Image 1 (spheres, one colour):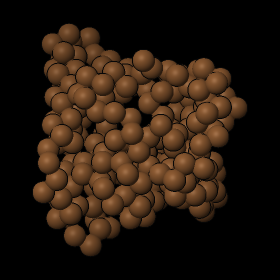
Image 2 (tube, one colour; image 1 turned 60 degrees about the vertical axis):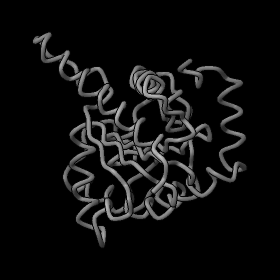
Image 3 (cartoon, helix red, strand yellow; image 1 turned 30 degrees about the vertical axis):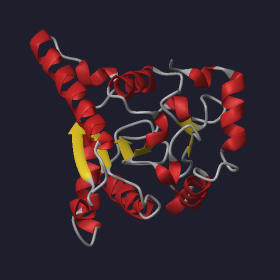
Image 4 (cartoon, helix red, strand yellow; image 1 turned 180 degrees about the vertical axis):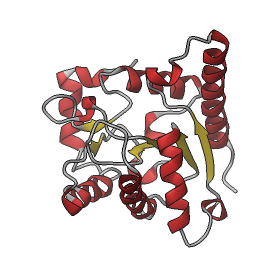
Length: 213
């Protein structure tokens, strides 16, 4: 099942838990702390259906889409948002045996701009991710979806005191789940991109299921 944020009752339940559910409160307080940082404006909360501080997978995309806007969409980052990108993620996670509560969705540039972030904006987003990592003690996998996510992560890596792998965290990269990532007249190339995407999610699923070392 997907796009449940389109259901007013489901969305109301998520709104009610956003600052009462223990696992997500620290994350959403962190969102409050970065909102309008350096005048950058609004950033969406993370829906309580996700793992919050107990997440094993940090899933990074480019920037928040329109479906995350309060009043227009849900006001949350969520794989249950009412848009095709969220729906595709939900399908991929389900096919790999990954549950929403195992995942924390985030963006290379966490503030709402609805366009490709600049290099300077990715730098700002990288600092936020460095701070976010400190809230995720159970983290096992970084899932980078798209080139901007990968570019942002390179900036994060330069800011970390040691490679994230030394914490036992694996980094997996794939294409963005949006439709544009599959825009090509070459059917074979499109099939290769889909296969790469599905393989990446399958790898994440296998990593999640492995016993902790």
